[in-house]
Length: 163
Image 1 (cartoon, helix red, strand yellow):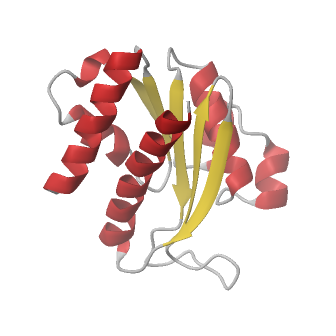
Image 2 (cartoon, one colour):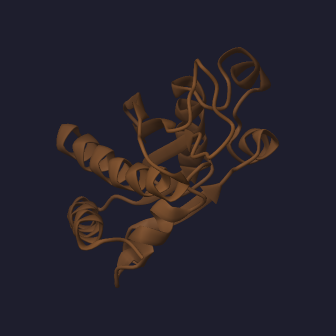
């Protein structure tokens, strides 16, 4: 269950999207659908939340969102390049006008020197623009995933203030 601050951020996001008549699609890997689940905790979220893609495997990212094999081979599934393709794919394959993508290494294993556990890449997309970033979170698997949800919501709100 998300904490109150996270729920409040999701409510603010839904309020802004409702006023602007925007719909949202999520493309999630390491968060396993937690962003969409957090948003759907709120009554009335169906006015905004169009769909959520949980694409944990590389093949799911390719098949469901159109991430290219070259992107995964060259940059890896945990990269801003992959996150951007995930977000663009979520927009293309949904009714969404706003998308967030999250891909990372929640742990406890799977990290490397170049991409340690806690590395999470995000992309935020509208039909006109896309931005991406990489964050490094501390803590156990649950903590990394929860921090990722918070950052996804914050990034969506930042994207809306620029739109």
